[in-house]
Image (cartoon, rainbow, N blue to C red; front, side, top):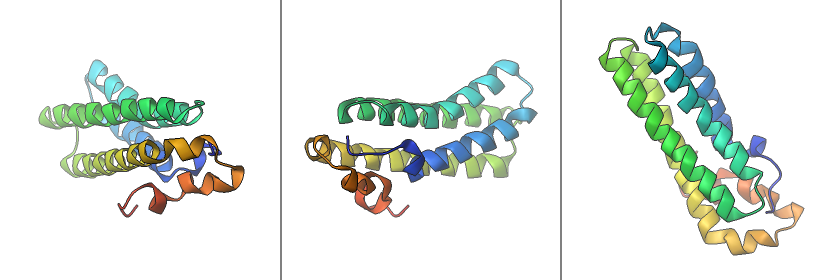
Length: 143
């Protein structure tokens, strides 16, 4: 697909950072089911980006990116529930929610890029790999 690895994608890096933060912050959530679901959805975001990036087609990558977008919505919902139950600090909620929204926008930009350029990516050479690692080529959003 003209792409080297997920480790080169800024969206994957930020999603990993968010997952680590969420796993650390979720220790204060007393309800086991909610805590584990928050952690699972946070971990699911970078995991789906990584899995999709290793697939053999842009269509498969896009499918996994859409799953990752769904996981950001799940995470935001679960964090809101934890916040309403006074099991998540307000400041931590605001930061996590903002980062999840930004990651969601980055994923959408990558989906748009792949949708628009999927035909040209099939024949891309290794020299073209930077097009997927440079966020400026993925969308007009400044990352």
